[in-house]
Image (tube, rainbow, N blue to C red; front, side):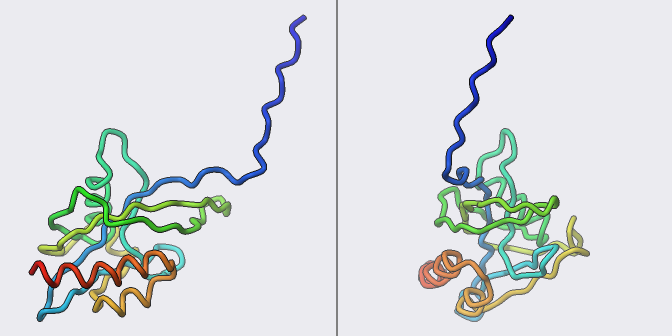
Length: 155
């Protein structure tokens, strides 16, 4: 008779946050930085396009793919992340999971006429400070505000 397997210790701390990758879609319009936000499918909150890691794909490529799927956005994605933000994701089961999102700037060149999630989401360009005010995550708000100063100097 085999002895019973020892029980695994349960860590009292919450599990490590799951990683997602996001694009921060931007453009210069009349000398000002604008940020495109998309609505989430369920709550219709204003968010940036983001998604789960994809096997064999680099984080910035995943961010660019999500921007195409969620907003029909085509452009130049940066390989270096701009920063990170945290949020609590509600899963289809009703459970929630803590997520840490790495954000990559995407200079938008065009928006497709048709894209995968067009009927599920709204998209809209906002002046940087307005976009920052519309997102619920404080760290994302700060990222947007900080970013909106730098690209205007590049253009």
